[in-house]
Image (cartoon, rainbow, N blue to C red):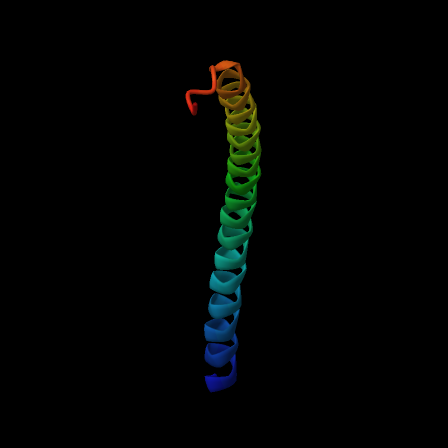
Length: 68
């Protein structure tokens, strides 16, 4: 009898571990998706910043030299 009870307890623990593993897999997939989106957003912002810097530099070049 004790062996069957231990087997039931072990089976319950294994089942809980499998459920937790599946939850962690889903969470990991969501985090990976969010990381990808944030990486794309970061790259887009870096590109926009670079373009803005180039425009500012071009405008600065057009200013007259005030040193006489």
